[in-house]
Length: 615
Image 1 (cartoon, rainbow, N blue to C red):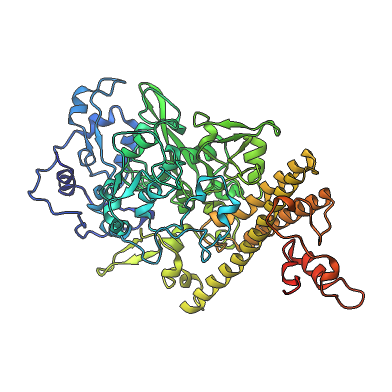
Image 2 (spheres, rainbow, N blue to C red):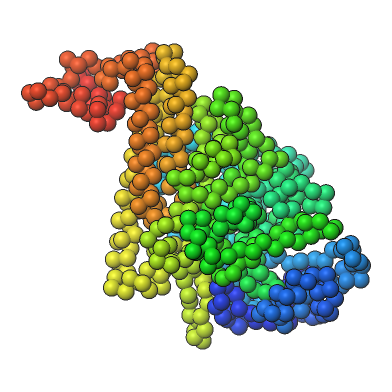
């Protein structure tokens, strides 16, 4: 049966159901990717009771849920399975649809939202761009794959293919069919290979195929982009003969088997339509480690409970999902918009001898589930893990992902009961008066009337945008200052190393301060609101970063015996000219340091340059 025939057969019988967050869907005809040349016959119905005889938990969800009238055959090809399954032996495995178009049959508006492109979110706009959030990113993160390319986010329809195309993932192996495909959102959503090509389909090893690329992606990374593999991935990605894929699987082969970004069933149980999560590391943090859905708020954790449901294979526990007691978009979005470890790193149990951590180690699939101020105590003190070695200094550092959830905890909006959907997925109204939850996830600045102004009723749209811009401008300034001092700190670590006059203990303290400065800075460049989600924590964290860098600089200067003006030590190995002597600097007011001395104290070791004698 062709894929399009399958969609047509689903369309002929799939009943309308409520979709996201309890909002009624439109019943208009779906937008299909291509016309069907001939109408396919309807699927052959199966006796659901036969399915229930083994899938007892599914029976409860299905019969009591809004999909109760939807026969199993609309989403599963189960005829042969029912003939051959006996006891714990599944027989011929049923086919399962993981495509958005299966849901689009009824949930047309949500599908149309999801596959539209937001032209305001540019493709391949690097965060290290001088006009973006982190101009000095490449230096500060040198040695990690993200220094090859780290772009601003854009429409969810592209989240899988963008990860493949980026220069840090597959060494240039995965490329757009041509550049025009990077704007074809619906094609990308309906199948990654509609828009992508593999430059070397005859091999499956990770290798660099283009200059200035790396091969840093792995199967755990892709768990945030797709769940096409949900039935073939054991809990936490542990290797198992019954699991086709694991943390240690071939990354290239894994990618070739994936196709759909952000499947609907990440957040919506297909049998009950109830709210859920499927990301195993989140379930591990909330349930296994008993941290709760809101680790800093026991009351909210009690309001949004997560129940771990385990599915067996061959009579043994295999995979799990997390059913939620209520629809909570903060928890649902936390499956991806969160800081987590998703790759190899370094064991730091012995501070003097860090050893490599490979994908076989469960620490490579870990949600720390802590805010920026507690992160180090979890990652380093509890799990003894650091992400990478900085090329310029040799320090072992954290690499922060996208911690929107942790940033949002404790913010003014979170305390007021605002959820992600209120700002990024507001209610929409169709021409027939029916409402639905938008699935075109985007910044509220593009829909101020439907988001900000629903609470801030005394504001105009211009005032709302003014508030957003003001907060982000202030935090962007703090990011710039943190980057300036951290960049300067890296230079001073190098000078200390070259000087030969700084003890190993002092250098180790400097490396630890670099860890802190890096953590408190990058948390806010990895997070995608430029501080808007929590400006108070952003300011506190970024100023801690600056303080850590300045503390480290002063410690190294003292250890080197460097005069703050005539900092000659180590410059014989540097291209930086020797600073002027004090008598070359303009004098200050009576009883005060020279202008140059004041500038050096205020701005650091490069401040003397403007005061050099003119030739």
